[in-house]
Length: 284
Image (cartoon, rainbow, N blue to C red; front, side, top):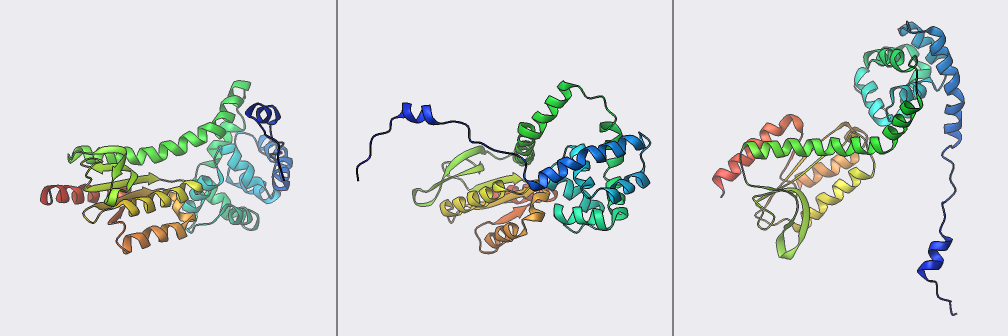
C-alpha cells in the first residue's frame, strides 16, 4: 500500500485544540454543593465556631472538599495536615471525606487544630474583586507548580549551605563523569563533575506523583554511573513519601544493597555535614 506525503504546513493547518470537560461526575457533585455550604457558613456569620462547623459537616457530605477549596490547598497537603491533627495515621482524601461524614465531631476537632475557623472567617466573608479571583486562579495553576519546585529547591539550598559551611569544593546541578565513560546528572558533585568523590541527590516532596517516580529514575541513573571509589548520598524529605511508601521502600532497598551509601532527611543534615567532613579530611 502506498501513502501520500504529509508536510508540516498541512499538519499545522489541521491541528486544533482538543475538546475537554474539566468536570466529571465527582466534580459535578462537589460543584453543586458549594453554594449550599458557602450559604450555610455565611448564615452563621463571622462568629463561626467549632459547633457550627460540625453542623455544616453533618449536613453536607462534601463539606470537607468545600473547606479545602476555601483554604486553597490541594488534597494531599490538606490531608497531611488533617492527619497530623488526628492520631498521625496516614489516610487518603477519600477516607478523610468518609470520616467527616461518619464522625464530624472528630473531623471538626482536627480542622479546628489546623486553623480552619480562622480561614473561614478570612475567606468566606471577604469582599472579592476580579483581581483577587485572577490571582487565585493563577495560584491554583502555575503558582502551585512553582510552590512545588521551590519546596524541592529549598532542600537543595539547605544542602548547599551545609557544603559551603564545611567547606568543601563542589559543583551544583551538573552532569558528572562516572565509571566506564558513563555519565549522570546529580545535584552536587564533590569536588567536581570530572572526578567526583561524593555525589549527592537532594529532593523534597510534599505531594506524590510523577516527580517521585522521576526521582527514583534519577537515582538509578546515578547507580549505573557510580564508580567503586564514589560515595552516593541522597537527601530527601516531605510528606509526599507517606502516600508512596512503596517508593520509599525501594529507596531504602537501594541503600541496603550498597547503591546509596546513606539517606539523610532535614533533621539529619548535621550528620551529613559530619560525614562529608570526615571523608574529605581522611580520604583525599
